[in-house]
Amino acid sequence: MIRFTALRPMLRTENLDDTIGFYMRVLGFTLAGRDHEWGWATLRKDEVYMMISLPNKHEKNHGIGFTGSFYFNVDHVDELWEDLKTKAEICYEIETFEWGMREFAIYDNNGYILQFGESVDNIGNTE
Image: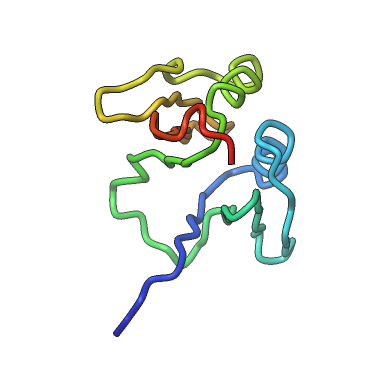
């Protein structure tokens, strides 16, 4: 049986250094690898990996760019909100939603929406 084991998004950016800096400085990611010739880097925070890349000349533009958001499941979402609310542009403030998630969203330096959420069932549990 085929099993998917991970998803590692590849974000396109016009400025690799600025994007690496944002994810390291604002979100606490570490640089796990970089290739200057390829215009590529990979970043890691805990079990989350993201790749960053300059535009690729062999890829064709099909008229639609990325139109979604990246949703991070986190622990201690309120603490993260307190840390990030003055470090990044806010998309929407922290709120508890009817579907049982407490979440907020910011924009990264490229305009990608980054959402952070925690199940209300987990809030207050200390393990």
